[in-house]
Image (cartoon, protein in one colour):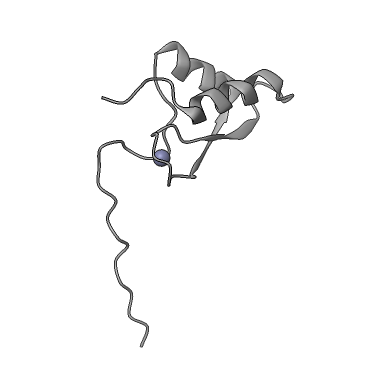
Length: 77
Ligand SMILES: [Zn+2]
């Protein structure tokens, strides 16, 4: 099991604390999957962010535990 407190989670809390936007405006938070190589962003409004946090959820840009599949190769004729 991963620790619940990840660096990105801390950063997200700081963003949430200092950002000045309307509750309905979406801003990019960091994915909290805990992978050092993941730099995805998740666009959420402060309300949506608060709702996820209230449910004890982490902010994820993708489903955790699923292996990243390489994109299908596209052959251009
Ligand atoms: Zn991620």
